[in-house]
Image 1: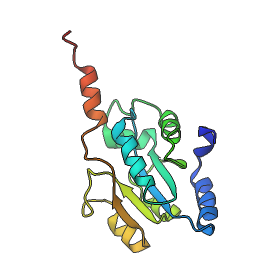
Image 2: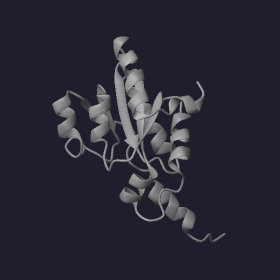
Image 3: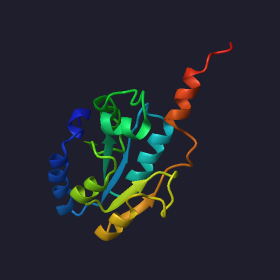
Image 4: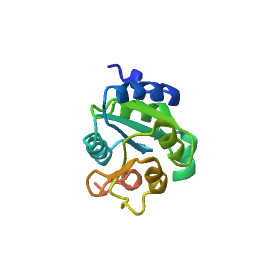
Amino acid sequence: MDTRQKILSREGVREVLEEHRRAGRRIVFANGVFDLLHVGHVRYLQAARAEGDVLVVGVNSNRSTRTLKGEGRPILTEQARATLVAALAAVDYVVLFDEPDVKPLLRALHPDVHAKGTDYTPESVPERDLAASLGIRVAIVGDPKQHSTRDLLGRLRRPSHD
């Protein structure tokens, strides 16, 4: 599949997920900024995909990324970040979102599983109460949080002493 065909509108994702539900497939939702894609992102998304049959990834818009991460972020545009995430084999669909959190997407898409990275615990997932009320299982997935875009940017900005 062409990577661009994996990036859908919210309504487009809803429609395609209905087809997957009718076929009895389990839907997993993961989300993030994915600014400067790194190995931690890849492992998170691979582990999320292992929780079901179809993986949908919500990618923060430029505006919501600036709100979350501050001035100077994102490094890459929302379209570039969505394209990189969509290019990963583990990812079936990508949807951009502008809200400060994914609660509206959880309500709209109603996945079977909401996958969060290991920087969360089951108790600290911001959407856990909503997920529970909708019957969505929360899964903590990926490797230990040893990778971050913030740290990578810090290393890139340090002067080299070669």
